[in-house]
Amino acid sequence: MQYPLTKQQEAVSKECQQYIRTKDVLLECVCGAGKTEMVLASIADALNEKRKVCFAIARRQVVLELAERLNIYFKKAKIVAVCGGHTDEIDGDLIVCTTHQLYRYQGQFSLLILDEPDAFPYRGDEVLHGIAKHACIGNIIYLTATPDAYLLSRVKEGMMHHIILNKRPHGHDLPVPRLLIYPSVLLFFILIRWINKHACNPRIIFVPTIKTTKILGLILNIFMQCYVCTSESEDRDEIIYHFKQNPLGVMIATTVLERGVTIPKADICVWHANHSVFDEAGLIQMAGRAGRSFTSPEGDVLFLCSEKTELVQLCKNKIEQANQICGV
Image (tube, rainbow, N blue to C red; front, side, top):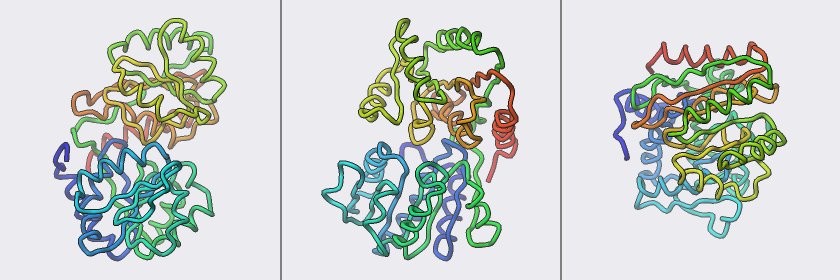
């Protein structure tokens, strides 16, 4: 591993190993806590016992990256990535796939790991829920920082073991969003000032709609080079790659980048964080893009709002509560 497990991560890993043999596990960890590393021992147990494992992810661009990481950890296992454009080979010891690809594997997995089950497209999709259930003949580990009502209800009913970790491995608190509330016209000038102030780091600006992304991108490109990424971007993987190569870049994105993408030293701004398209889980995930690096564990998170809303304040409160708990 790049970094050894902390004592808290080790405790979570062992608890997961113990309970996944008999029931499903909800692993609720703050963004950047190292969820993948904490399920490696459970994966190793299954592979050592010749049981087939699947790691299912919502976003295509994360599948290939995770498969490469898992190849480092499990050199003797046959690890296969299955997603759009990568379906020539679909059988192996450990399958890494998008949730949609689970339809290929009815009754095949003794261990299924579902990453971000509260995110699109898995959340609320009964068809995908059914496909996942039919693919797994054993137990499921659900990995998320923001469990939805369905997962929490299963915990309450005793159908699932719940493990919580509210600390990142570097030991620093989660960056708490700063809220600035001004009329929309003034927000643009505040955004420009924020971009310039944080010019030494990569900056991600989350916006609520594709239309706003395009408009903001056109305006900002007059002053600086910007990357724009939405669900309509056909070359999304290439855009993200080039942004990662530019340590001083500016990315304007919709919620398509709220999960699964880690940019070292990134600072985060959410434009019109009070917009109705954003929900609590999404805001927490966007804020969670900052402060993940060991070399830059603090990061800056700014929520720009045209009005104060209960949802934005609730997001800030939840992050502050996680910092106060600071433990398993």
